[in-house]
Length: 328
Picture 1 (cartoon, rainbow, N blue to C red):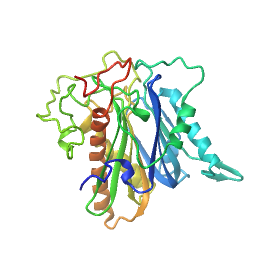
Picture 2: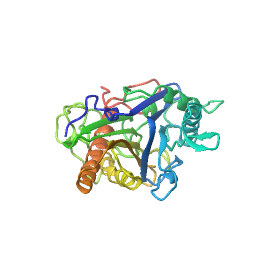
Picture 3: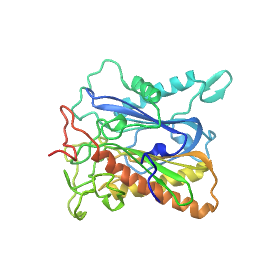
Picture 4: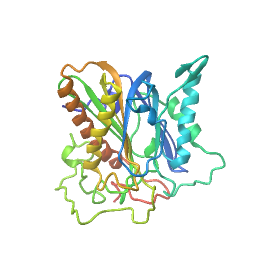
């Protein structure tokens, strides 16, 4: 296995990512879409999630394909970003056909970034417009770090960010991940210290920081000043393999292994940690059980690497409440 050319989730043919952000508010939105509807699943393992239209991703629900996935800052306010995306997609003729109406299916999830030093005294909820702009910005190339849904993200001891990574498997299938890292726990012991995900690093993609990765399980770096629901890491893993909704749901579930490898602690009662999984492509599984297992493993590795990359590429901004990984 090796990373794709961009080492981004858009190494999967058909995927487009769009970011929009407001650095004065310290928040933003990230949208994943494709030219055609796609199969998706979800797994929620955190105790405080914020979501929209995720129940319909269950394998037993009627809708089989969706039009986009939204990751947003803003806590509950940020769920409105999906409305901006849905409105724009409807104008494009996308969505579930109901008579003369188009109803785009746009599941979404949010992180809590309301206490990160940004100006939150808006008169009108900004997220609908941010969602629309993010969709308009969708392309095969996009920036990671302090962009999109990762703009105002923080971890226990460092600034968070938007990360992405990919892998091309030996069987020709491509797997990728994108994540907004806003965790209650830590991804590293501190500035310049090796990432907990360092054993999975490829070609110094998050700095190649030398030194043994050490973690004392009796000591946790926590957002001690935080209260409930002020965290959450949200991610999308994707593949160009053709999966059913049940297989996509399973892929989302096993991908949480990557989150647990990269964040300590993960999946806490005060995180809304969740993973979407998207199947965008038509590559058939030649050996269904073995291929599904390998895709799941690769997705978890991509997610661990993407988490470290999101924090590594974060950049300092005025009134930040946390230092960046590269701060000196």
